[in-house]
Image 1 (spheres, rainbow, N blue to C red):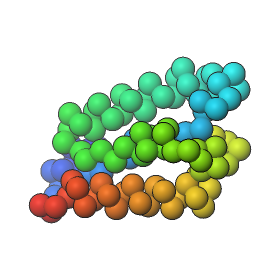
Image 2 (image 1 turned 45 degrees about the vertical axis):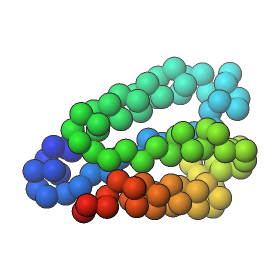
Image 3 (image 1 turned 90 degrees about the vertical axis):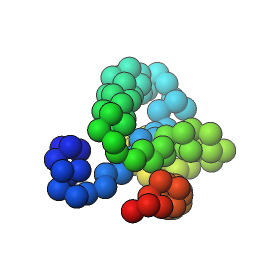
Image 4 (image 1 turned 30 degrees about the vertical axis):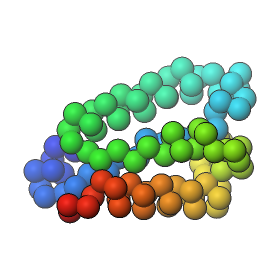
Length: 100
């Protein structure tokens, strides 16, 4: 799909999504074991296909209020998380899409 978008003149930005699964590892063991590797493979493919990567996961993993950035699902962001995601996207656009 990324190749299709590129071939049709689109610039693709892929978000490496973050989560709150590390806080309660027992509860989210399945997701840590299976979903995170799936996410990383998606990022690898995106890089291979020339997509710009917005690394929200790295930003959220080191944020001091990480547990307040997600609701109880551990993956859906709260208002605070949405604001941080927006800031991260703007930064990615400014740094990676200058020539576009």
